[in-house]
Image (cartoon, rainbow, N blue to C red; front, side):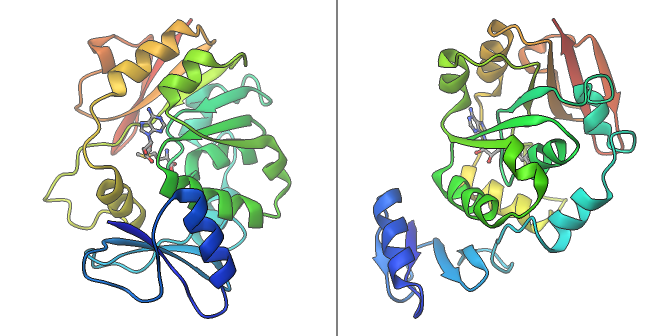
Length: 242
Ligand SMILES: C[S@@+](CC[C@H](N)C(=O)[O-])C[C@H]1O[C@@H](n2cnc3c(N)ncnc32)[C@H](O)[C@@H]1O
């Protein structure tokens, strides 16, 4: 299903990544592989042969992700308020569902120290590549851990002021124009039914605050009523205080 594609000038990097991820190395695309990771001059890319969208490439120095970080302020970003950055601009946060790192890096760019945890080795490879190329000052406040957050939180000695959860939302077929990034995440991860368990482990760690991103009408994780909610147009943040 997954493979690394060796491209003319990047054979060595492709070989190293194939060994690291224990994935086959192909020199051309084959029909039995759905996802290919490959290098270009820009860095690492992911292409899904069954999706009708271009490659996924993460870049914090240019483009959409960069612009979003450039524009962000604590007062304008609902997530920044949800995690309490307006009260403690240097807080230490664990983003337990790093994904493409958009939200975790946004919070780091606004001053937080952020531990990103991601369990998909493919996403970790893309994110690691983007962070290695990132030349922004906030980069030094970010650590990326390749792990299942349930295991990470159960064993970490770190103290986090805030734990953030953004589990995959269910894909709704009528929302055909889901953004490219989300299409890739949904195609890679499939349905995830362990978000309740992740909240349980987060609660056990007793951080100052836990923030969970949920679709507007979805039930609360663990059916646990939050201390308060921040409702936005398309989703809400459920906020639990210790
Ligand atoms: C909706 S995406 C998160 C998007 C992210 N907030 C962003 O801004 O890019 C969910 C991600 O969480 C990851 N994930 C879900 N459960 C996890 C767990 N228990 N441990 C680590 N990663 C997890 C999935 O692999 C997926 O990449």
